[in-house]
Structure formats: structure tokens, C-alpha cells
Length: 284
Ligand code: GLN
Image 1 (cartoon, rainbow, N blue to C red):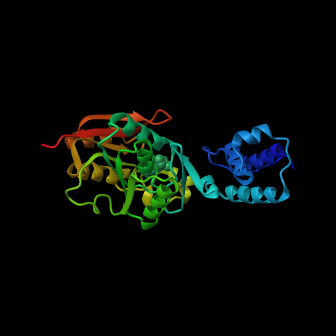
Image 2: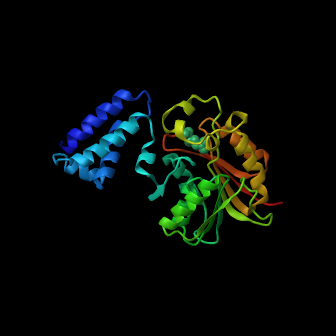
Image 3: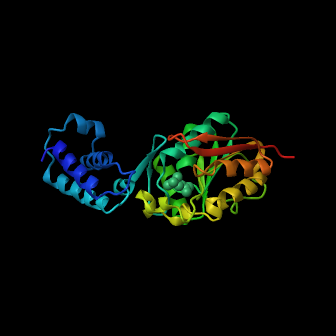
């Protein structure tokens, strides 16, 4: 069978089975076939009339069958690209999201290139911490996660990418840190979804760990805790940047302001929705 036929058959199968409005059958089929063939997606466009070997076709069809059952594409590939880095993924952590790249961009644009100690709380696969460390070799980045498998995965990603200015530790947010630790930058993409949110029943989210997604107080519990607790660990003039749900901007800004942060503002994600809020801390 030709490459273009294999792709269009797979797209038809994925489109038929999907009830998810965020479904991307073309992209999924291309990513999976490119993976099986060890080629790029662009290569597939150019060589659509080439034949696919039968072993490869079998492997591709097996992946499409798993995708029909809903398995996240990132799991089938074993990795997800984030901020230009290829990160291994696992069922123990969130799959890195493009919207979270906005947080990385904001952090990079706000902070100096040197003299920054950065802390990423709930680092998961290490996505944010590793993107910061890779972009700013002079920074010292610490990533913390409560799940031991996440810490191991983040460290494995750092090793695979030869990133040496990021280290990872297990802990419940700030609990693993010495009380005297200080950071110029604290970032987090904590759990922020309300347990009743219908979004939890859709797409990849269905397969991801609940503990990385859901928080109490309508999703605000961890965000509010971080806003409170980060003050003790920010160097004077340091910044706190938090990802949150697109309807939580006003609550997060209010909490930052009430806690005494200044220059409080919110940035939009790729879809133009409020997603990252930030504030600066000046010790009294
Ligand atoms: N942005 C993710 C989603 O909506 C959730 C990530 C999180 O809870 N931190 O799927």
C-alpha cells in the first residue's frame, strides 16, 4: 500500500471513532506513520506515492488501533516535543502542552540571562524546568515533584538532553527545600481543574494522572497555596509565574494582590485565553 493511501485509511478510521472535538486525525496519523518509518512528517508529503513495507504497515495499523481506543499519541510515540526539546513521557505525569510554552516564554523574557535560581514546582516530565535550563545555561534550575516516577522521568530527560544545570528532587511543593533556599524565579503548572469539569472526560486528559490535574476549591486550592507559600522562598524582587485555567485569571490576580505581590498581570495562551498570571515579590 502507498503512503498516501495508508494515511487516508487511518484518518478515516480515526475520524469515524472520535467524538472528541479536539481530535486531530490527520496530525495523529502523520505523526504515527512518520514514527514507524523513522522519517519526518514533511518527508511523508514528498514521498506519498512510495510503498509502505508490510511489516511497517502492520506496526502502523497496530498504533492506529490503540489510538482508536484513545491512547494519547505522545504515549504511542513515547515522547512529546516541548519548547524544541524531545521529552520522554509516561503515564505518571501530564503530557506537556503547547500552552505551557507561554509560561516558559514569559519567564525567559522577564528575567536576566544570568544570576537566576529558578524553581519549578510539580515539574512532571521536567518540561518547564528543562526548557528554562536549556535556554539559559547560566541559570540554576530546580524541579520538584511529589511523584517519585516523575522525578526519575525528569532526570532521565535531563540526562538524555545533556542538560546539567537542572536538578530534580522529590517533595510536596516546598517541603523538600531548606527554609533558607531563595529563588529569583518560581514557576508552576499545578493541578487546577475542578473535579466536576467535563473537560476531564475528553481526549488525553482521561488518561493522565488525576493528581496532576484536579485540585479542590474549584481547582484553585494548589494555586492559592503556592501564592501564599512562595513568598518565603522568593528572593526580593523575584517573580512567581503560575499557569491556571482560563476562567481563573481574576481569582489568581486577586490572590496575588492580596498576598502583597506587585506588578500583577495575566498573559494569554495560544488560543487567546487567560492562562499565566504573575507577580513580583519584594520582601518587607
Ligand atoms: N491545561 C491542562 C488541561 O486543561 C491542565 C493542566 C493542569 O491542570 N495543570 O488539560
